[in-house]
Length: 219
Image: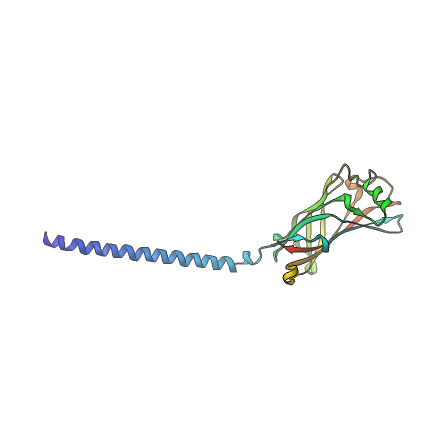
């Protein structure tokens, strides 16, 4: 009996010491693993390739277009009101572009022509007040270009187009402007595919080229 009563406190003390040591080891491993995971996440390829999102600065951006007139020259125009964003990372798959364009903001430099193009013969902005683009896939092109495939919406019709584009520059431009990015791209479409069928192509060309020049501000 004396031997048992002497051993029990000793065993209990050993067990407590074992439990404390075990808890300490588990806690230490957990903290070490958590710290390691955080370091891995910060330095992993996926973290480095993560895209940054930029909001379009309309003051320093433009959406222009050109179409042939009488088969002789280009008639140029632009849209004054638009908004959107672009996401850019070193992995093209992480990149995207989306824009909303107000077709009633069209400006060709002639008030009379603007009224005509906004009317039923062409854009019919009263019936179709929305236009825009949203990317569905971005991949690397040649010489640093990006191929942006997406849906272009105009005149109540949405069709797939491909924008050939390039990042012109990226970086912090100080306290006033912050981090920014410069982007330029263009695509072509046939106006008849979008239901704009008035006038033969001898008067107004069928193919329209759109040029998108964006300066984006980091969100």
